[in-house]
Length: 173
Image (cartoon, rainbow, N blue to C red; front, side):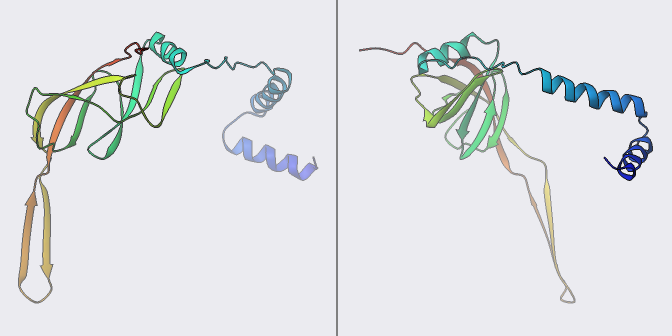
């Protein structure tokens, strides 16, 4: 490293408010630890899908990625989900989520191709309420014509409470 490069490096780091020795030791330790430690933390992959489901089931918390009303949502148990208005449902109805794209936990993830079979994962959502969003005001005007129009609108929404994620045992005929 040339002297002018060292000078520039020092001035940049000192300008940022870092001490030279702290930065030097941080750099040294990072390079030393990365170079000397090559420990692999990768775990073995499960042999089949049932083993993968049992690994996910054993974790303390799970999540799913599901499609509902044309959009994908990342959901966990007891989540409150607000979706565009669902017409043919009433408050208290229980919906079974069919299009589940991904199931996972903190350590493991299982993706469908494109969806996971509903017989492998069951998630229910309960309709909590039908509500409306905030008032949206659109003001239209044409210059020099005297035309003014105010449009007010509240979009309707449905709120769902996500139930527990269940992994029923696969039925072998």
